Length: 79
Image (tube, rainbow, N blue to C red):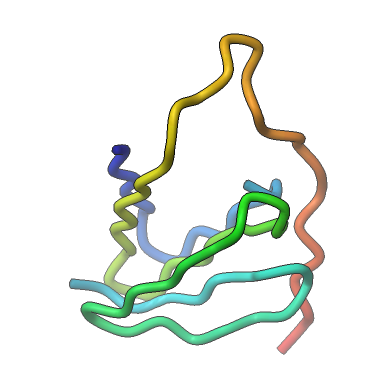
């Protein structure tokens, strides 16, 4: 289990009680207080906080010793 706190108005530059957005395979989705999002391991994801910041609790299975993430660019649409 991990807790991520994003500063206000921060956009995650890489794929991997507040409002914000989540980018799932290049498709943005609005987030609001108490939203729960299940993300399959193969889905590329990134987060963007709103003016009040964003807190994300991530829960996953065992992590391989060599790691399991592949870093890449987040393709946020403009606007």
